[in-house]
Length: 300
Ligand code: MLT
Image (cartoon, rainbow, N blue to C red; front, side, top):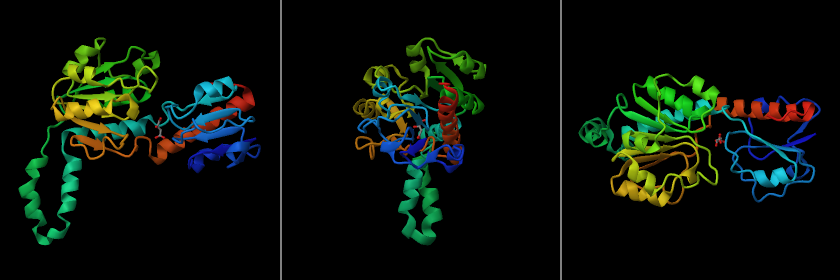
């Protein structure tokens, strides 16, 4: 069986394929494809292809319908990188409150100031002051593998945490701290949060979900965090909300030409799952799923 991969893939997961598999084959000749973030929508699906496995949770870079029509099974790896994304979301909460990114940028501008730097730092630091997280309210929208960890982390940081997810699974509900408040009324949650963290998948229904109508319902001066998918948020509306002071900050793992350089936007270069641990967990899960399908006929 020929296995190709469209992105650099952790070697530790690829080792799960034994001698029956030729790993690193040409895409056009491969029965199995491993992919991370490469967009597959414009690629031809080789006639020999049997399965595509995404080393990650989202499948929006894969033509799922086209694969289904051709009998190609698409796997993803929900949960395998959840801890990596949760940890970056915690960093995002801090970046949204303390002006850490702006302060670091400012320190770089002092590079030529030599011995004067310590005094300049003490004089200039007040412009980067920001509030603490403890006691503030965090709203978590989507309580799946990542959202539930973020909600629990918020509790551990001393925040009041509201969770909203009409489709929460029993498994995820069991894993939530009992201190997370179940919010059935989204509008009420939006009006109370100092921070709103988005953990929903990108689907035709959720595209542009976070737009003007939502921002108007949010507590004035709240911060929005997006470590899920860029297209969930309407960029023009988020920029308008920032310039009108309705939002204080937008921390996103999905920079684009509209967002980079916009005051109030903190751009991170899609680092949520970029940890050795997440990469290895995802490829291991993907490799096991593919083998289980081919060798035992199981589809999970
Ligand atoms: C995901 O969908 O889980 C992430 O986008 C994975 C990644 O960063 O490759």
